[in-house]
Length: 144
Image 1 (cartoon, helix red, strand yellow):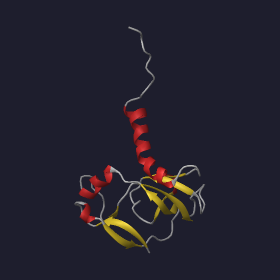
Image 2 (tube, one colour; image 1 turned 180 degrees about the vertical axis):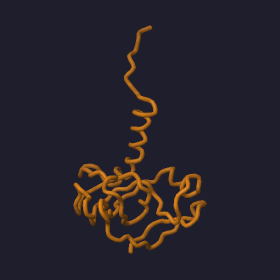
Image 3 (cartoon, one colour; image 1 turned 120 degrees about the vertical axis):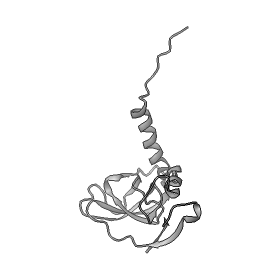
Image 4 (cartoon, one colour; image 1 turned 90 degrees about the horizontal axis):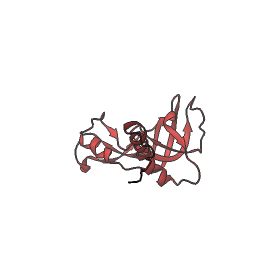
């Protein structure tokens, strides 16, 4: 058993519960990650409050970084001991978790777990805003 922060009903921070959870073995295409750091994001409050509905009970948290401790069949490119980071799916507020290997990225040794856990969701948001919502390009200044 490992510990996780879960909610069983929506509401304020008092609904967050530190509980034992069973993690199990990774299935096809999955990895088991032991977290060294997790990200805290404003979306977590939306999910906890019920503004963004989630299936309950739910382990909170959208991003994390840690070490792979088990690899399921066909989790190609990953092995036990790899350092990884991810954003999504929900479930990072846990000591360990199972997740799709396709959602993880290998973490270079020179990026600390804490930085990786704090940058994944924000990094994808920045990319989305700069490349899909409004394409930012260099602006040529014209002298007045």
